[in-house]
Image 1 (tube, rainbow, N blue to C red):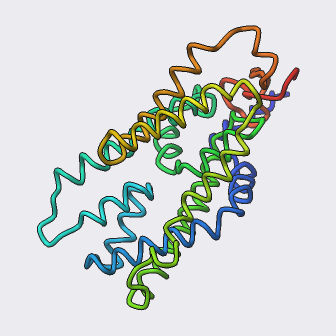
Image 2: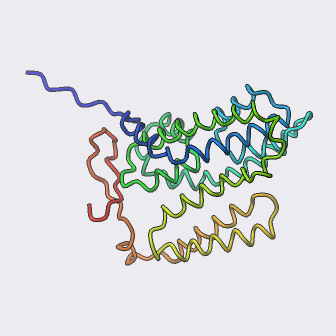
Image 3: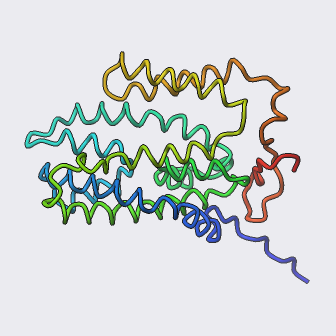
Length: 262
């Protein structure tokens, strides 16, 4: 009697993709509005709808796209756009590092596909999950946000002529409002107080002393440094403990769980 074949190693589990998309449903209105604002700006800068959607597909980074479109001219300042977007997207170095439990043991193509669909929103939602081992959840949220973003881009582009200045209606605040809400969900208790305070102070100082978006990196750096300096083994009991357990979906490294005591 032959032995049964082992279950296939599913890097992007269908059920995880579905759950990731559903988890990002509350972000639909803000993502749609923010994408529409970009569509309005693209209309004013003379981009075609095809160029805008191609950018959204290949870049998939809202803040970087806003900077690129805002700098768009008849003579495109390529070097300026590259430097500006590189500075803004430096935060993805830290985001990528935080996603190590999601991609641990996965092949390179999985990491590339998964990281391309990482936005700040689906990353924040993913990091609140107890189970981080299967990248399908992250990918599902990214696909959902990407589709909504493209629909928002299209709507804003087609209606752009009727909204001369989105700032009048405070539509540009949608992005800030989303992250204010997501931040609350990542709070773990008093162990986060010092790093969060340091990040806030660093951002404020950077805002008033540094050009452009360097304040983002200033705040991030301050928070990371304080977190590293104040970390102690005895406070691990106050935060969720990570543990590798068998993964029924076939992840080579097992299932990274942040559920305390399990």
